[in-house]
Amino acid sequence: MKYSSIDKNLFIENRKRFAASLKPNSIALFTSNDILPTNADGSIGFVQNSDLFYLSGVDQEDTILLIYPDAVTGAHKEVLFVKETSELIAIWEGAKLNKEQATATSGIKNIMWVNGFDAFLKSVIFQAETIYLNSNEHTRRYIDTETAEMRFNKNIMAKFPLHKIDRSAPIMHKLRAIKSKFEVDLIQQACNITEKGLRRLLGFVKPGVMEYQIEAELVHEFISNRSRGFAYGPIIASGGNACVLHYVENNKECKAGDVILLDVAAEYGNYASDLTRCLPVSGKFTDRQKQVYNAVLRVMKAATAMLVVGNNIPDYHKAVGLLMEKELVDLGLITMEDIKNQNPDWPAYKKYFMHGTSHFLGLDVHDVGDFNRKLEAGMVFTCEPGIYIPQENLGIRLENDILVTANGPDDLMKNIPLEADEIEALMAK
Image (cartoon, rainbow, N blue to C red; front, side, top):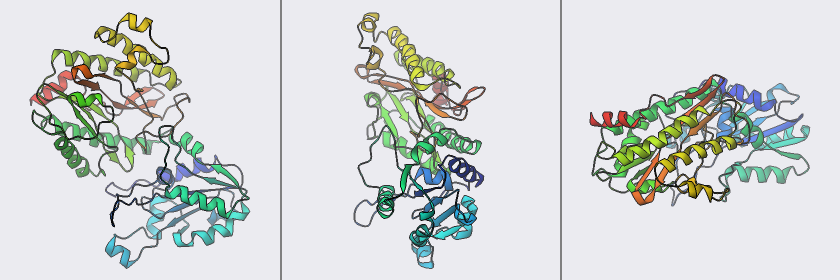
């Protein structure tokens, strides 16, 4: 890992809150992700299971966490199983955590080698009534590929068919939605690294530069600051490419007069940030580009002000839609007649602003959480309105990361240039 060590108290407190949410006499099990293969003997870099990381801080493969709050033996209440290291592994892969290091990372005292998991589980499982198994439950994605977690769950259910099985995911979604100060600090660090990347680009972007060259500049800056790299696939979309919401080719030339939409951000310590900015390739926006830019900025500022305790995302999105509706009328993109005749299920403004304004942010860029839950202090959301006009080869989206607090929204990206005039001035330098 490139990031600095994380205070183990984050993971100790997370486990306490999770354990307190379990039914009496229950065991909960979590397992690490696979190292995913590519072709031949190649593999994709390892990314830890977010829930396992949240509860243990361990960032390596072949790891299992067992939580059994009502265990008769105190040492069995929390057990962490890690891959046994060796001289051979150290030579070929780099040493894995030893037992002392695993304790220092997680705060768990009982560390065992993962090859002893089956025997240990058999010694305690029949004392428990319920087994909590975890799964990657997300409204935006159904996973077809069988994961390590899926295989693990299938194996447990086959071996212990008479136990009650429950889901950890609803508990994890509830807990992970509220960020502790430790987590906010990690997200802030990711935002700070993202700021460095964006500022690096202000003096780099010019006509003739390629989208992939911009991507390379960001990778350099992110990794130089102890990030693993991008928190998600970077979108570097110049001109009409900005009207493709999930444009990822990043292979076109940035031409004079165009605007580049940059949806790019760093991760740090497995925590994500999420930023969108728009830069004029020639260093100055045209009057029309600035008109659209400022319309999006007004919506963004008003939407940010609504991310407060007690609000909820469905009502919030409706309110943001009405703000955008007015801006689109003023821009001449829709008419009052369009609004009068609109389909209530797909309002007229959706032609130019077709996505939601906010999503949860945390260990995952589209983090887990219940969108019907009222907003609470400690939640972190993106705020990212946009206007996309294919006929003008123009897409403008602006996005910052917002912490909900008892005193109102706290913009974690408030130091990153946002105003059109400020961006032009910085690019002119």
